[in-house]
Image (cartoon, rainbow, N blue to C red; front, side, top):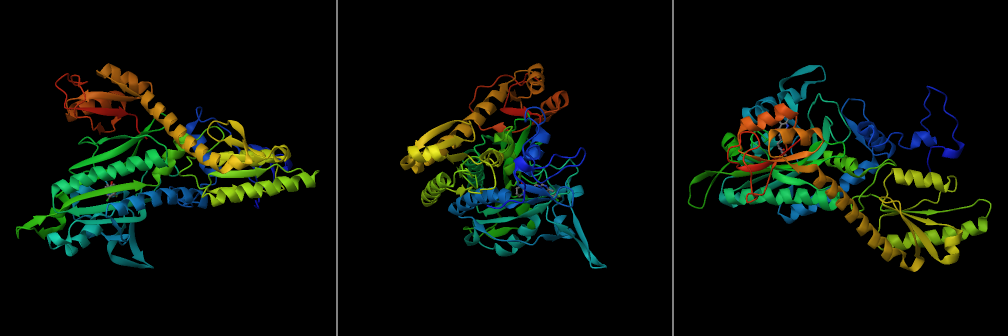
Length: 505
Ligand code: 86X
């Protein structure tokens, strides 16, 4: 391994006011505590763990290989699950003529200030402005109208992986809020309402699994309120997450579009009774924001903490070398190489850090910063005992393991780390959800940085009252039709649902 940075021990003292970015100890590590200044902590972690670099245009960032590898892993999971559901990938143009984007006014209303436009080719003005896609309903459904003629053309299930531009004016945060981001958008058409509605929930379950099983981030599943749903949808379902800074953030959405778009775009077909019918549609999306949520959830004061299933590197083997004792070092190196190749053969994503120029302490810190779930240390004493030392990133605990047992133990520990991270995050989330029976209780829960779970009559007025009193938005309505309900938290009338309120990112 070759790094450009100087090892910490030899780095020059920084001149006051002039920052040396070549890797002095203070420059390398995280200089604020997560609990003290979350936003500064987050910014340092993603930069110092080498996940991103800032782009030239505000809100547009470079996703570096280590960050992109995380996205690729979640992509691989979702993509293979979509394919099991019969979804096929395709690609639609990034540029959408203005007339097409504005064809279904209701759906773009409120969004238009966020649209970025291509207006010129060289110096000459285009006849019609072209929108850079903020989402692809219009351009995809324009094609769907041509492709769908008969019930035999249905269901049509297409997904695309692409980039999106939405010119937001809120402060950008890498992954969490950027003007350009990566996502998948699935757009499906069915002959019946029932099939479409089933898929909405299948996809939502998949999104929940991506967060919970891959990212080890627990979610709250539910339906958005009328106020918070996508305007083009009949209803919107979502997975909501809650970050350690006390802010809820939407993880992903799966919409039932009904026939709203099929009527606007004339996506119709001749059904089995020889009658013309409009298609029943869904759309669903999962974005690079999810990477930011996972980082925010698990990271600690030493940096990133990656769940093993999403970690580009699961294990790092660090041989402890002594320049004064080349003979012992050779034995250490040889054992380290054996352990490394055994793990590689066992299918573990493993790296060997045998750089002789850097101290073990420097290496430990930098791999901790990068969130590698498990470190294996091997020194001369370990060689003698035919054992190695395992150090967990999540708990910091160390244990000595016989060399012969190392591969099996790695598998076991990675599983245990994945589980422990999820359970810790789940306990955190559960501790934040607090039932609130009246407005006074809602105010208190929100003030304490929690999620208020309220019985609710379903009226816009009562939802608005909570928002005005607390600044909290509704997240979603959990799928718990049969849960016992109290009178509405605001008007005391009979409740239709329960609903989550929290301060949102
Ligand atoms: C809403 C809806 C939907 C497919 C998803 O949430 C999942 C994947 N699309 C997206 N939405 C817009 O429709 C929209 C439209 C315009 Cl013109 C815009 F500038 C921004 C938008 N943002 C969200």
